[in-house]
Image (cartoon, rainbow, N blue to C red; front, side, top):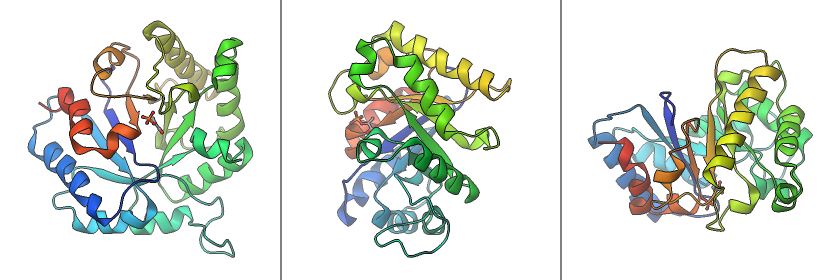
Length: 252
Ligand code: PEP
């Protein structure tokens, strides 16, 4: 991986209740206790109902807390069941996952995701923006064009790129135990970084993570892709042991 800050971001999805505090507590104790040999950052994106509870209960917090989605409108409004970026920020979220393929599959399109990104950035949340191709796209050789389009359609030039972390998550690898081959993965991450630099005319290298079936067994080989700046971890972040096994090479 690069020498930049390494991110290990957990996505709990629809998992957890008040008893799950013990999971985040163990992870937080681990990251607090172990001197960082390298610069790493752990974030856990949890269900909204747990954000405030975890934030208040965690002692000496070295783990940051994030959310997993928001409504696109700012502030308050007549949107039954919805939660805005501002409300999440007030609860203590510092990060937010947007554009996740599970939400795209539920009907979120690029223009809606763009509004959500804008709303989250206005609230000074760090956005974890997910992109990635479906298996059919990959088979047809469309990986690069799909990713390019997803970025172009949801990320405006005026957005503060310093507050956006890009997460490459091939849809076919999420929750399937399948990961891309190392050479293909390297090529995609390089492509995303070059595309972002070109599109936004910036010399600063963007932060790009990989997500999809990352576990304690494959993290070492995935880390061989030097261009990756960290990982977005779903299922394995719901267990303190599995998550700590993934991060431990970076916390010695
Ligand atoms: C995810 O949902 O963002 C994810 C990476 O899931 P998993 O690690 O379970 O494949």
